[in-house]
Image 1: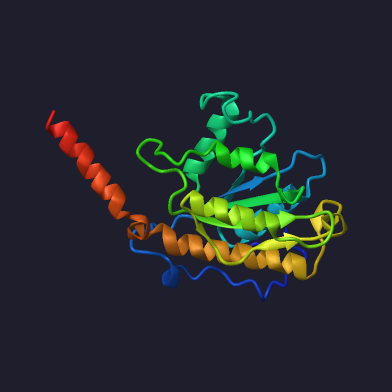
Image 2: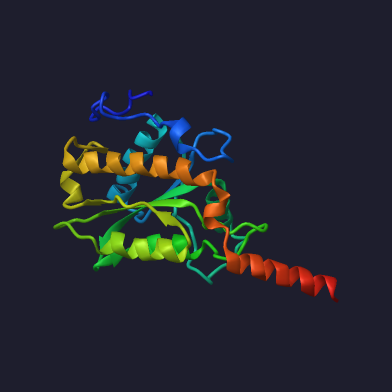
Length: 234
């Protein structure tokens, strides 16, 4: 593992992915593909900086990461899916096998910027594939004051609604302005928790992506059969 960009990490404590014990029968062994979304457009965005710390850990574990910049993304229903930013977001979602959602808490909830990104991801299939069904999800939040879990709890509900496998661990960073120095997160238990979350996300992604039967739904098989019968019997 390349840990050169992780100065606050104890190198002997980060465990590499055990591919042989984790991967499913349909897994070809390519790097797990993780998309990171963040919920603030500020020049100094702690939700973005937290996501960037997570991305560094994921890459050290052998994952491929991409991050979506929500600047310029229109409000839902204020444009259509051909808008450049909407198309970019949907392409990244289709590419991904797992996701990280990192949002500030604003007025006791996730930001509108975070929710807008999720609202542009359809539940209905794109090219015959549901964009988020069966994919893994890790949730993280940052707060300017005391520690809160309102936003991660909201995002968990949203992840379930999007038919995602939301991992048990999560990160909540209070007084985020005091946890970063020159764009990097300080060493300590809050940083260690982000490492925990990324380790768990990488493992769950490898565990679930090669097992298509985990999200093979009876109701959808019935619906598919009905569609075939209707077409054949026209």
